[in-house]
Amino acid sequence: MLERLELEAFLTLAEELHFGRTAERLHVTTGRVSQTIQKLERRVGAPLFERNSRKVTLTEVGRQLRDDLLPAYEQISAGLAQAIAVGRGALVRGMVRVGWSGAWCGNLMVQAADRFRVRHPHCDVEIVEVQLCDPLGGMRAGTIDLQLTEFPIREPDITIGPLLFAEPRALMVPADHPFARRESVSLEDLADATLVTLNDAHIPRYWMDRYFPRKTPSGRRIPQGPATNFWPEVLVHIANGVGVSTVSLRAENFHQRPGMVFVPFRDAPPIEYGLMWPTAGTNPLTGPFLDIVNEIARPIRGAPHTPEELPQPDTTGRPLG
Image 1 (cartoon, helix red, strand yellow):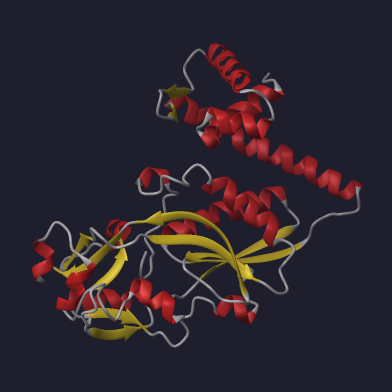
Image 2 (cartoon, one colour; image 1 turned 45 degrees about the horizontal axis):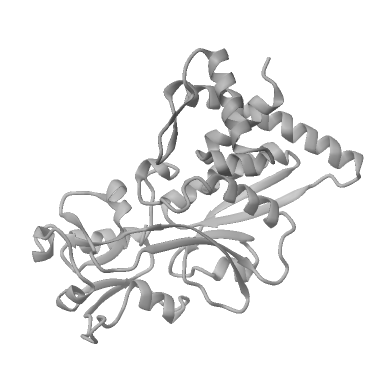
């Protein structure tokens, strides 16, 4: 039978992959965490973590043990939390509606929703894809309580939460375009191409200037192509040689097709993804859901560009991601 500290130290370290942060969360010393993990490894008869001076990673045995233990641990924790809530007359009920843009954002929100339902079995979660042509519409209409989408957003009626991760940018170009033969492109190169953009009727101008600029850094005009409403339109335009479009470099993993090439930018700022919610009328479940998103995202924050470090998404996707 596992001791409580062994269980919590193992699962917390499996999430944080950092002894110091694990110790801080468990309110014990780093040495105590290390001793506890070593004791557990002796009981298992195999290493659960690989450690060196730079990082901590799970071994295959460690990953299997985490996958076997975590659902039961979360169910027990949720049952205890519910019992306490009932005892205090504070049982949580209701629904939280969460939005996402970018396939990896959607996958992270799905993971958070699964964990949220375990901890709050009397609550429900609705997951909504946020269309980039109207990134704030759902929150303003009251149909989305919390969303994980592209920064920057600077609106008085929207509260900005933490930046979770950032993705390097690429230029999506037709396969026969001159840029397709390059190893990288510059923002200045956009003046020599037609930029397929978004319908910006409901998008802040500063957001468009960040991702679909009208001028290069030196002030050269960028030819503006079709203004699209949906991601499939962008793919069609690029594949048919109409123009180019800015995307997350990760998009190549999901949208690569004949007639299309993804070329990294060497000087464009990354695409930043963060949490946001309506300032007025905040859903009381937003806070608990936000906490869970942060739990899941914490191990990837600060090192977001390696595919295996981000939740693996499905193959749907959107502009910029």
